[in-house]
Length: 96
Image (cartoon, rainbow, N blue to C red):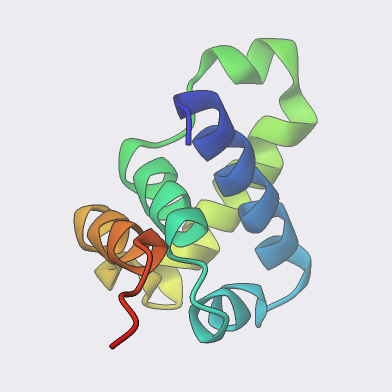
């Protein structure tokens, strides 16, 4: 995934999470590791403050969602480990 694709996936999942408390739990259940890694990176790095000038509603939604993410304990998700898991699951499995 490109950096932009990661950002779009992370923003999409965070916006879902804002309105649906189980969105991240479903992503974990469905093993959507790369999407979860994108969310973890967004939550750790924060939202770019320039977004507040260009799209204030999206900025506020992301900030609220990231706050909820931290308060609900999802900050324990490690973006590096999630990326490794996504890469491992994406490899073709050998048939024995």
